[in-house]
Length: 293
Ligand SMILES: Nc1ncnc2c1ncn2[C@@H]1O[C@H](COP(=O)(O)OP(=O)(O)OP(=O)(O)O)[C@@H](O)[C@H]1O
Ligand SMILES: [Mg+2]
View 1 (tube, protein in one colour):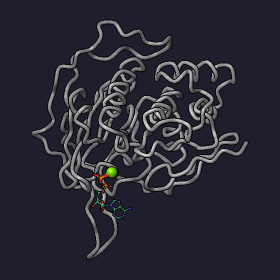
View 2 (cartoon, helix red, strand yellow; view 1 turned 180 degrees about the horizontal axis):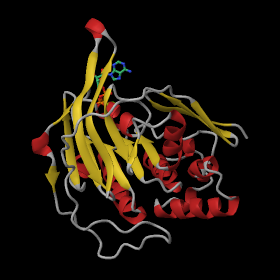
View 3 (cartoon, rainbow, N blue to C red; view 1 turned 180 degrees about the vertical axis):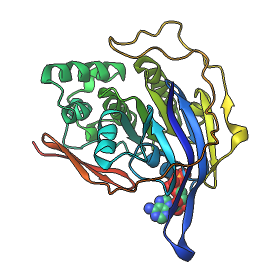
View 4 (cartoon, protein in one colour; view 1 turned 135 degrees about the vertical axis):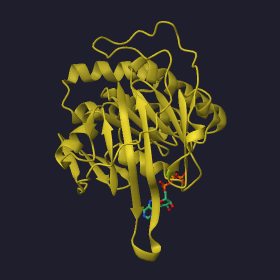
């Protein structure tokens, strides 16, 4: 199944003489369970593209489908639900809430979706185990190393069982050895959780283990660098009960699409509330998650 289908997406910031065309007709698709590295120079449009795929921003023209749903055409309320239930983000700056412990941070998506406390605790425990931080569950982000903080962010991103994981330079603040470990962890959890991931990065350690690589150049996909590669996968990766089918053994590269652009419904980006956690969304991404105990 195709998890992400981007067709002829354009996005220009500003108007007139100061207008910047960040995306100039981007088309590609990503199959379910694939890990795709998105690379390109600073300013090539990576963050803009991730924001549009995740429904945080809307394109000027073109369409985005995630899990078969037309993100660009859907009403804002539905797009909010998609962001809450199906898409998770990981940022370069980790984005953890400083006053919450590692375990509480990981539990945020489960609070937002209203999971029962016992199920929430079990899932948080499992996610902390997966990222190797069981012993650090009670520590706050300031008491963890950068690599550990990003592992908490990965655990949090996956806690709510998203279908799509979007990561924007997740190792940009880490040393190269820690970055390598984080990328390997990402590779492993994408497999074990059956999630699809699009990761903007310059990091060679991810480029080497991604199923395929997309390169953005001046707001366009460079087709020649969409490479397919055989990834060494464990022969049996057990999926937790209720998960979707496993990872395809021979991932295909993101396929260029040449279909006409669909109409776009622009929408404002509101704050969303659930229980006592409120996540403030702005057009450049999730900039603040407030916790009101
Ligand atoms: N909010 C904004 N207002 C105006 N221009 C913007 C805005 N956000 C991005 N741009 C411009 O759009 C282009 C693409 O920016 P984008 O942040 O998507 O690039 P990037 O590939 O993520 O870069 P980097 O590797 O530095 O993070 C750049 O020329 C940038 O200056
Ligand atoms: Mg960026």
